[in-house]
Length: 436
Ligand code: HAM
Image (tube, rainbow, N blue to C red):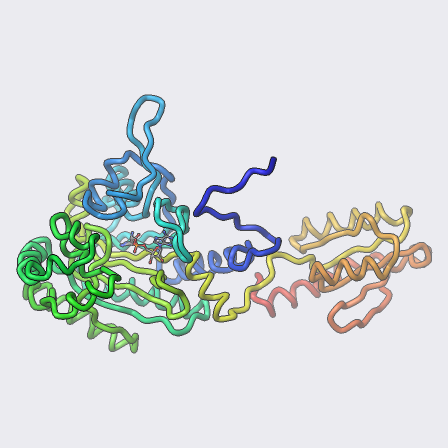
């Protein structure tokens, strides 16, 4: 019997049929860019566990959100304690930040994370039950520049990945008090339309009316169009902060649209919220989103420090890259491929392969070499750059044949020169291809 992977999960494999956006080289490429980018912006990596005490998420994400109400993978451990697989990264990061007193070191704290998240969602393209997020969080003084740093970081990530046709939507949800005021206004506006709202929105009317603004139902959208704007309700300070963020984005020539209906699906947001969408995805077109959470750290028992961050979904990003035909570098290739044509020279070739590997030069050997043409085909398939061919005749002359597989040029080289020559070639190649 063959076992099948559970619904909504997927394998990332180095090769195989129907992998499309699930090839390891695509993921490693995106991850490499993430690590470099985070270094350039001064963010340090934090790794938190995949599950936490359930209350960590209830407390932060919010009881009435879809994530908590419907989508959590919750289980009792052997001692009967409720645990949940993390549905997102911000809650765990803030829990760790507060628990480990990281605020004691410096004023501004900048972190990033990459890893799997879990939400029991209805399956559709771009929506999975295990998905991967790359996120950053900046915890420290409240300033519009930090909001813009975070938005520019995500924008630069997409630039470095070579993505096009990305739209940025911006909004401010103000403080908790602003939202209470706005909720009243919104309910007043929606009340006469209650019977025309979708079932989901009717349910949200009581529990979390702001989320109605996020509805994708066409009838709801018509009603929502004329709803009062939250931007007319937020406090003077919140408005000033938002205006400053928008001005700084304009100064940096980052294009955005203001969407006063953008609310986002987590309860911890205050002030700035934003979302990046791609026109190459279907209904699930959000490739990243985030915002400020000015009371979250304090609510976890930490100091009164505001924070701002985003998370971006790697599945949707890689799908967009594939759709936009971005070139991914290959996973790994042997720079040099040894072809020993007799058992007498096999030991020597194996030793040289090992020696080159110890010198950080990707090397492979065909332990099954019989016919030179077949072995050359294998080397080409493996994307090798050079082949070193050794037969009995060359061995007697203390020489080895070196073939450049791109130019087809070949020459005989003295056996004791092969390592220094290959070292030189590798250095040039890796510098030209930014591999070092
Ligand atoms: P979020 O909007 O829930 O925000 O998720 C961020 C991104 O994760 C989405 O834009 C999407 O690309 C991806 N994503 C979410 N759910 C799925 C899914 N089921 N399948 C595939 N991709 C998905 C957060 O999680 C916040 N923690 C972001 C944040 C960080 N805010 C402040 N700091």
